[in-house]
Amino acid sequence: MIREHIEIDTRHGGPYDRGSADSYYGRGRNPHYYVGNTGTSERVTEKDMTPDEVEAYHAGYDDNEDSGCFKDWG
View 1 (cartoon, one colour):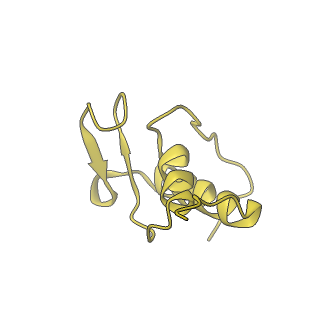
View 2: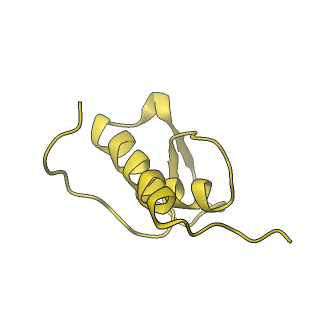
View 3: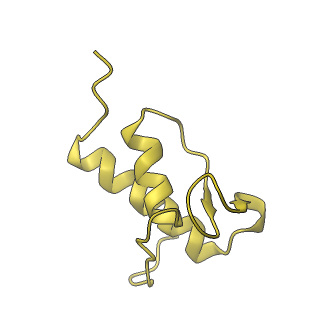
C-alpha cells in the first residue's frame, strides 16, 4: 500500500537516487541505498531498510521509468 505522503531523501546514494539509477541503467529492482557516498560507504539492503526507504527506492525507480530517461548504450 502506498502512503499519500512520505519524506523522500533525494541525496546521492539515498534510496530514491538508487532506484532512479537502477532504472536509468536498465537494472532490475533491487531496493538498497548507501549510508554515505555511492559505492564508497556502507550499502544497506532491503532486509535492513524501513518501509519508507523501500517506498522511496520504488518511487525513484518509477519516476525514472515514467520519464523514459535511460542510458544509451549504443
